[in-house]
Structures are given as C-alpha cells and as structure tokens.
Amino acid sequence: MCFLLFSCFHPFVLSCLVLVMRLGAVIVMQTTKPPEQVAQPNEYLNTVSKYQGAFSPEECDAVIQLARAAPSQDGVLDSKHSENYRKTRSSLVHFIDYSPAFDWVFAKLRDLTINANQSYRFDIHGFRERLQVAEYGVGDHFDWHLDLSGGPTSTRKLSVSVFLSDAADYEGGDLEFFRTPACPTDRKRGTAIIFPSYLPHRVTPVTRGKRISLVAWIAGPPFR
Image (cartoon, rainbow, N blue to C red; front, top):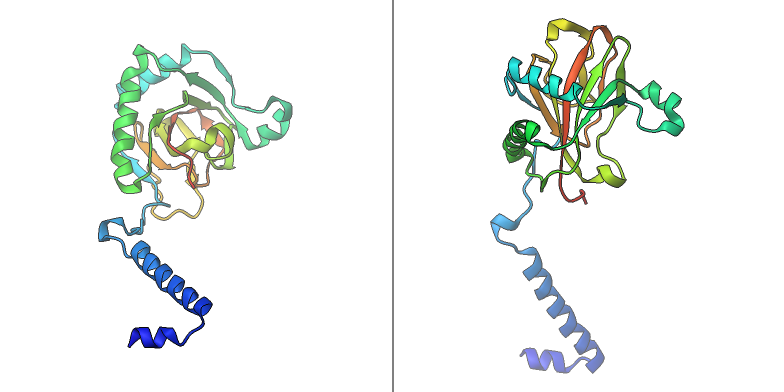
C-alpha cells in the first residue's frame, strides 16, 4: 500500500518526502529527552540568601585586623574618570590575596557559597579574585551597580557580603537590592549575604559612624 502510494510521486518529490520523514524522526529523538534532562525552572535566580552568625564577633575583628595590615586604596577603580566614578562609589578598600593567615576566611566563604548554590545551581569553580574589605565613612556609598560585567568580572557567579561592623556603630550604609523579593534587611554583625552577581544592588550613604564589610566573588564559566 505504501509502495503504491509513493510510486505515484515524481522521484524528486519522493526523495523530499523521505527526507522530511527522516528529519521528523530526528527531531522527535532530540526533543524527547529523559525526564532528568529536561530543563527545570529555578525560582531562586532573583533571590538573596542570608546567613546569620556566619562569622562570630571575634572573627569579624580578626578579619578587620588582617585587612588593615594590607595596603589600602580609594574605592575609585577608574583613575581616568575618578571624579565621575566617585559619584557612584566612595570608600576605602583593602584587597586581600590568599595567604595562610586568611585560609580560614576563604574556607568559611567557600562553605557558605557551596551551601547557597544548592538553590541557585550555578556552575561554579571557586575564587578567581582577591577578597575585598571595604570601609565606608560618613558620606561614603556605592550607588546602583552589578558585580557582573564584561572582561575579568564576566566570570562572577555569586557575590558575598559579610557585615563586619556592629549595626549600632553606624547609620545609613544599607545594602539594598533592586526589585528583589524577600530581600533581607537584617544587618547584624557577622551576617553573610549571598546573591547572584547580576542582581542590581547598592550601599546607601553612611550618615554616622563607619560601615565595614567583607566582599567576595565566586567564579565559574560565563553565563550564556
């Protein structure tokens, strides 16, 4: 029956029909994947994770002491446009390379991000940049920005911010996220905040005292 039906077509038309049937079979094979291979939705991609007590007060003091032993610089990253950039960010920054003295800090941050990534499910490899301890005095701030951009920062997947200062020691300096649901507002000392590096966020101007935070970025293959 099928032979009689196909035999009535021109050979070129018949070859096209056979090709279409073969392509159809390939498409069915490619789109019919086992359940575990089908893309699953992830409702955590625009959420912020909070870990209270990630660092003890004594550990916060130790991080501050170690950071202040390292060279510091103005938080202006682009010297050619420093005046314009200062309108976006103003702070004192200590960059910290890996060393045995900081091994315990890297270890704690690693464990925190591994735990948080159980929800985000990003492909992460670890640290590719120095840690940063930022000190915000009165008037200092960091306006709306993303941690993820082009070039070296394109590999950032997760951002970490740890409140090293006691909340009573300063006013202002709030870490805020743009249109992010369930955004944590607790800034208790030692609390770690972990979030996808593409989330817009800012540090509002400090109006009293000094705000000190530890910042890290966990890297992986660039998003695609």
